[in-house]
Image (cartoon, rainbow, N blue to C red; front, side):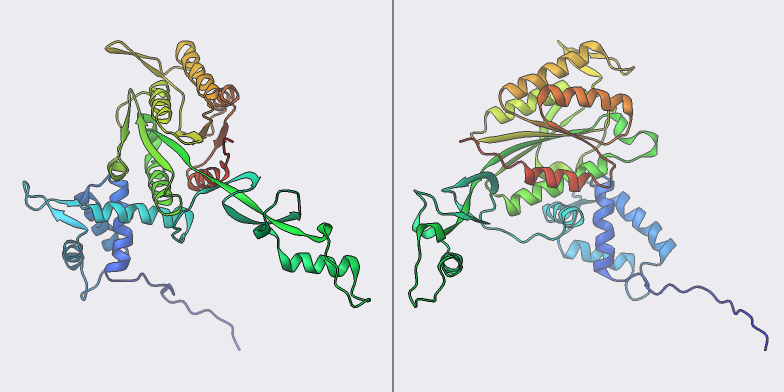
Length: 368
């Protein structure tokens, strides 16, 4: 009997889902990439529909657009009929989508403060046990563990139960603290150079962090600033619309603004997170700018390092997330980090969100 092969068209097992929910997930991604431009996002969605068959005769793109309007995700521009803009509901949805994509689904917490390494008479119980010490409260004694220790240490052969101070175990408490964070995002032209979109992942991280703070750490403060030739503060709701400009990188202006914002916060813990892909290349001088994009300019670098030292003196650590692997730039970041006594990560775009999230959780110091 001859052995042969039969060929047929490949039919993937997982056919793309059709309907509002599947299209909406794609739309939320696209509207982030297009900086809130609904028209451009819908055009891209149409192209994807042509290529991958996202809709069918029962539910087409026209139905999807109507549902977006009915559900309150887009509004028609009153001045320009036929043009749409996203609503505050969509802005919040984009932040939640970014949070789920980067950090996974997190349960809401009523207090959600940062734990610190300091233990003792704190606010929240930890999982750590230790021996009883003079001054510990009665409420902290763990009776089950203490009775077990008494049985192991003294036995029950005499029929009498003996519990001594040495048998007692208490559960550690952890102090909770407020944290003020300024997130700096580089919007210089290099964030979209060489065909690599670096600004969209940076935006997603900022939106996810904002939603995380709102849900899990509601007592914390998060301010977002952007820096190019200048630096300015933006509202959380403006993040989906953030775009790169024809700017140089004025890291000094960003750090100055960040430190000014943190000086006004009356919290024990303060920190700066900086997401950038390049070196500082610009300073503001009077009404003009001093610019040099060729190499590391001594004047620009020295002023940047001076600010790193100034932040260290007022106990503001700076964590730099450098989304490039250029060894030349890494050397500058290492020097900057050493001067500030902060931290630095050299991250690809894929792992950026997890690094920011983990570092935010780890910074749990409390000034006592």
